[in-house]
Image 1 (cartoon, helix red, strand yellow):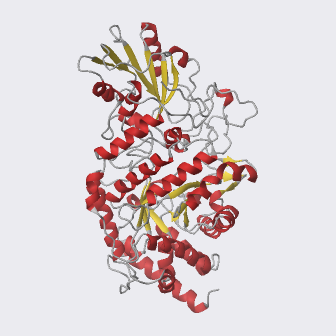
Image 2 (cartoon, rainbow, N blue to C red):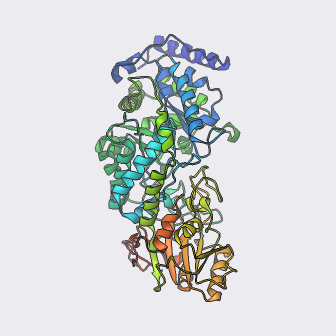
Image 3 (tube, rainbow, N blue to C red):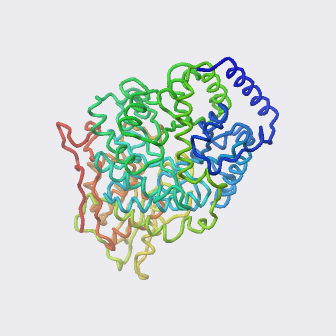
Amino acid sequence: MFTRSTFLKSFVLVLVLQLVVSCNSTEPIVKHVSVTGKSVENIVELMTLAEKVGQMTQADRRYLIDEADITNLHLGSLLSGGGSTPETNNPSSWADMVDRYQDLAAKSRLGIPLMYGIDAVHGHSNVVGATIFPHNIALGATGNPGLVREIAHITAKEVRATGINWTFDPCVANSRDERWGRAYESYGEDPALLAALGQAQVEGYQGASLSDADAIVACTKHYIGDGAPTWTTGKNGKIDRGDAQISEDELRALHLPPYQAAIQGGTATIMASYNSWNGEKLHGQKYLMTDVLKGELGFQGFIVTDWAGIDELPGDYKSDIVESINAGVDMIMVPGDTSKDGYTYREFITKLIEAANEGLIEMSRIDDAVTRILNVKKSMGLLDAPYHNDRNLIPHVGSSEHRAVARQAVRESVVLLRNESVLPLSKDIATIVVAGRGANDVGMQCGGWTISWQGGMGDITPGTTVLDGVQAMVSSSTQVVHSPDGTIVSNADAVIVVVGETPYAEMHGDRDNLVLSNEDIEVINTVKASGKPMVVVLLSGRPIIITDIIEEADAFLAAWLPGTEGNGITDVIFGDYSPTGKLSVTWPTDMSQIPINVGDSNYAPLFPVGYGLTY
């Protein structure tokens, strides 16, 4: 309970804070106090309410109203959302940018370094030149926790090279509906597989110690049931951020095990989900966040919101803040996109201080949140020494060694769905045609969350396409022809047709009709009419309706969204690697079957979970 004296002191502090911000001062508010060597408990005792609130605030760097706010508002964290990059997008520029922000944090009274978060969800995928690994649905097809752990460790190295110390990953969603635009962020539909791969990814990111030079903080997401919402029908049908209308028994059986495993693996942070559970938004679910996650499961780290996640709650902004923090959220992601009338981090800080002063949030809850945040920072070594960015890791970003592991992940993830004795192809084949819009497109291979939020087609980052892989694989006497529309095939001994989905990410990827584009179908029909042996490679973030098309192909491979190393696909096509990938998701026969999952009463898919041919 606050006394009148405490209230007046805090009120004056708010006025001083606002005055400092309006003056754009870059000087620390008060004399610096070192926290080096102090316990987290002692640091919390030293902190003012404004300093505590600052630690609970995360802003996107592109929406900083003034970079001096990092110092003056004691910000605890920054992030780069999809596409929030430095003007020159390369590893050194990222490192320079993060160092500048850390320098500003060091000027605050307590000098507590920032946690800097990014969606490094399949490699350091916002950075041009980084190694881009297959998305999770592909990793699920490998069924290989050791490989997933190694991928996460490599990603951690590349992330740390740019000065960043926190990734919003792994995603351990159990995707129950193929129409969901985030289906590729899920490893599959088996809770045991999700648990094994999710824990492996946490361990790979965080290493033996969070203070290691090549370790970053993992953020297991999205808690909980994000892949279970019911599809809403109508013109704007969607599933993203929807309502998971399921029982608690089903929630616990299908969606909770990966979080139990992630906690066992030491995940330092967990992200709350946009979705609702039976009508109540997760960002306000005290039972699930405080009672189950922190209480029953014993989670000792901290919970961060999703992007402006508290805005999804009913009521005004102040009540959203009160409800979410009282429910158990510890750090609030406040992007502050003023161009979209979003709330800024300044408004968040002001309203949270007001709510605390009015007794709407107990100081014990704020102290608990700050303690959790600082415990993670202490584990990272951020409280015991000035922040140090290890530039020696920069040469590792996109290195040949890292790309070799990505290539391995691609070849282990490819699922051979059909083979009429066509594969493997001979490397001494006389003439081979590579067709389809995905044949020479790194962006299409990578999918969403690559360089920008939604991803993009074309040469968005260095990589190897299927066409590149073919050219490097065949003998010097083989003629390789690139025919995007499949019309130049008369002399071909075999044709590889690469088709699939245009890149997308959350919200924009929700689709109620999972069929190939007319352009893709036309290429397949053109090649089929030629009578030439045809190998179809499908690039997709989920199963696509292929029941009729697969019969047209002599061989058909599900290559998912493989990332930058398309030569992993040609490793399989030419027999350097016999396919081992197995479906981690059910492949529907037609749209009427969707959603379809193992355990359904009428389970009659085109291909079941676990299906995959080999040579």
